[in-house]
Image (cartoon, rainbow, N blue to C red; front, side, top):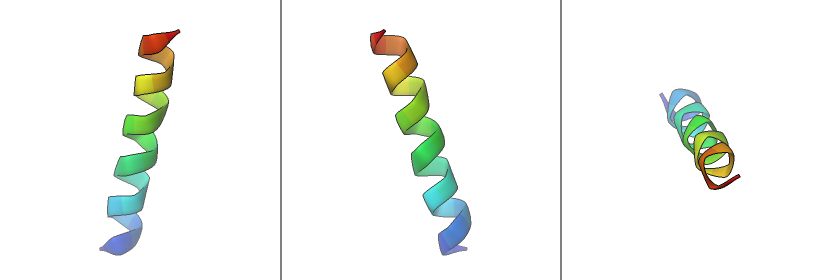
Length: 21
């Protein structure tokens, strides 16, 4: 459960970085 949550956070982080760029 924690692993999935961490993956979701990483995915959001990547999306945020790409959005800013």
